[in-house]
Image (cartoon, helix red, strand yellow):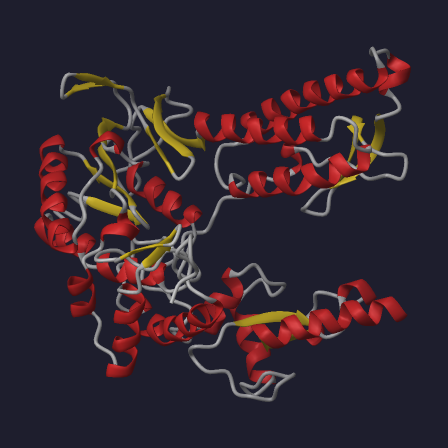
Length: 464
């Protein structure tokens, strides 16, 4: 059953879907293609972008930037169910969820295609339906002389195909369209374009500028002299005459600016502290998303734009602006950055109590480490995953050493770690209580027990 009017599964169905998803995920994660990244545990948009960078940074390429039209609404049920082999009780539940229908303003509508709207299980079902498309293209165009003829990178219903040949790109577009037909899907023409990473090209009667946008990032190449040019790599490395840069897209920057402008407008008469508390999560989250690419210039420009907005906000409250009035809202102060360093700043938007507005350029630019194509959280490689998740243990050998010390058991629940478990590194004595990042103060826990322990530590701090 689904809720009337909006078609979202009930709590009972969502809980049941989560159980079925947990049953499907370990099997399908071992089967999914290495360059699909959307709605998969341990993978992110940053992995997809890093993979694109690795695919184009040593040459110049043509790109098919495509979008699958209404992916979650049009998947063929029979095709999807034919790919899933599971106990009959689970398949019966799947059929019921797929065929449940929607009540819209009291009018019942059948769902002949598509996955459950708002369903917990919908993302993995979409990935199952689309699994095989990348392998199909790789089989059509295998590597030649260790160079890929066509590389497909997919994030949910968005995909790019990269190739040094325009002819191959055109053939891939046709091949993908044909492959999608039995799935009940098609490429969206108005959101599909063929372009080049470095040059302006004429295609299909239109002028296509170099580069493309993908997941909120702009990816393109710029001509460069010998001191800044990229290289082909290898023993016979040579200059290629250009440099690959990935930045926040203009569309993403504009949307972010509009969100901040809206928040400031909503808080015209609110206390300064309330405005800061609403803006900080927005700025931090956006900065973190783009912190692995060439974002420093964009961050600085955004900080200037926001400073001008806040100056206007101050002027509207004070009926004019002068140095003395501004100093009631902007102050000198010391800022502690995410990497632990401190810096002196002037004109900080800060309350008398010391609450500061976070700036974009306080977020350090740190290159993202691309996930291995075959890696999954269910492969039992605890060393790889504990290290990848940015825990306190900085080398795989130390992770293995802690695991050996605990004899393969979680120190809190006492259960052995299994290949499907997600484990995390924790401090025996919390750092807030003086604990240090050293071997004797580290332990490996199941994720859920770590969450319980963190909550307990926070509660104990209230009484310490």
